[in-house]
Image (cartoon, rainbow, N blue to C red; front, side, top):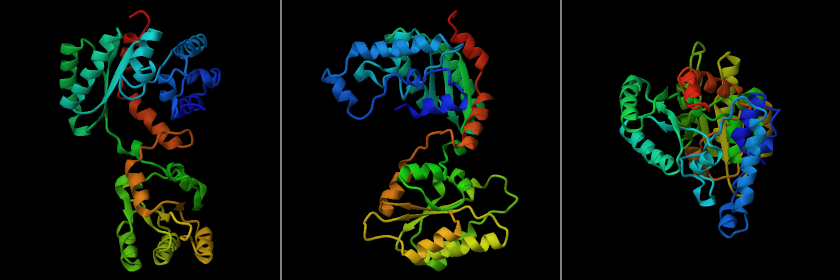
Length: 340
C-alpha cells in the first residue's frame, strides 16, 4: 500500500532509485487513529519509521520534498501533524492556500501560528486557484500582508485552471468501481466538466434535441465545455437507444462524438436487456454502468475530486506546465535551502 500521490510522482519523474515504502513511510487507513489512541500503535516505532525513511531517501537525493496533507494540524491526533513532522525532520515549510485576500490570509494566519508553536521556519507562501482577472490585485495585497505579518515572501500566485479538476472517464470508473461497457480505450482519458453532468429526466425526443443543441464545432480545440456526461436509469431503453442513435449519426457525418452515458440502478432487478447490451458493445460509444441509484450517482459526482494519476498524461503534463510558470523556484530553493 502506498499513497497515490507518491506513486504518481515516483513513476512520472522516474524516481525508481528510491524505495516506494520510504516515500510513504506511514499510512493512516481507516481505524489507525483509534489503534494509536488505544496504544496499539507504537509512537516510537512510527517516529523511527519516518526518520529512517527520510534519511535513506536523503542519502540518494539532491533535493527532499515533503508533501503535507490538508492544513498544518492534520495528523496531530497520531503525533504526526504536518507541523510535527516538519519539526522532526528540521524541514522548512511552504504554506499553500486557495485564492482571494481576506479569507485566504485568515487561513494562512492560523497555519502560521501552528508553525510558530512548533518552531517551524516558514519559507514562503503560494496562493493557488486565483481568479485570473484578480491575479495582479491578489499578488499586490498578499505580498504586503505577508511582508508585514509573516516576514516571508510570496513565492507564487497561480491562476485557476478548471480543467485540472476535470475528471476523466477513467476517474469515473474508479469512482463507481466499474469499467466502460463500451468505448474506445482512448475515450477513458477524455475529461468532463462536473458542471456539464446532466441527469436525463425527459423523453427520448427532448433528450435528442438536447444532445444536438450541445454539439460543438470541429474547429474548437478544447471541447471540455461542450462534452456532456449524461446520467440515466438503466431501464430507460428509449434514452439509451437515443444516445446510441445520436452517437452513430455524428460519426457518419464526421462530427466529434465524445459525450458519455452513465447507466444507474442499485437493485439486481435492474439491468440491461441482452439485446440493448449487444447494441451498446457494438456501438463503441462511451457508456458506463454504475451500481448506484441515479441520486447516489449524481451525489457522488458532485462530491468527487479526482486525483492526478500516471495514466492521465494530459492532465499531469498540463498541471506541471501550468504551475511551473507561476512559482519562483529559484526563490523557493534559496528560502528552503539548508543554508537559510
